[in-house]
Image 1 (cartoon, helix red, strand yellow):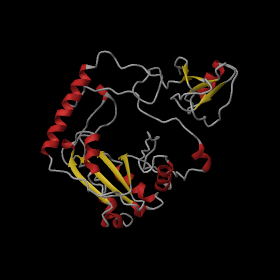
Image 2 (cartoon, one colour):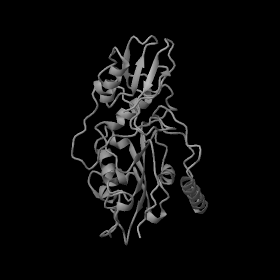
Image 3 (tube, helix red, strand yellow):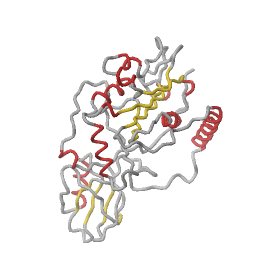
Length: 319
């Protein structure tokens, strides 16, 4: 792990092991590098103590503290939550710009051809309901996501789903792994599995679907224009629910997730004009592993926010 140069300000929050003072910067960095929830080191102005801290964004320090921000890999990120900040390249990537312009043109054309979409012109209901937005592109875990969300909710009757599904129905190709030139696309037997058909036909799912709490827009994979466009379409399936949750079609849930999120949202100083954002941990809704409610100790621990630091474009397409 590497660290940025000294910067004014302190890093808020303590790692799970606590804000422990060390006599030297080298010792504090060595400890911080061993802790996955350490974002850097903060020191007194005089350099008398050095503490590993959780967050990576320095805040102004009336006491004159200084900090060294830890980077998560050898490649620094810019424009995100990680530091230290670097400037974007002086010469934009022409291939990336070409892809961006082409995508914009395609989406503009799709919007021009799409029948008028309107969201209900009404204020959100004050009944504690949650609208769950999913954009799913040939996602085999979409059905498990919906099933797990209802099963582990404290108040499943307060959930509503808006799903935009892009599936292949015939002559489908599958992805067997790999990346770039190593990726393979063998023929797939049969169509993709529908996200909610099996759930709506099941004893536990039928009441939710019959009551209109599961809404789905089914489109072909050839009509997909990326997750942003799918989420835009899904937003039009909102029907005035109090809270709006946007997730992927392969998301796991812990017990009581709905009440925990509502409580967190209500604790924000700007509620009801507040946003909770997170890059979720690894997990699968198809897993049989238990994921219990968080304990009071877990809720008190401040952890650095996750994020994506880089992207790339593939130029290898199936023949």
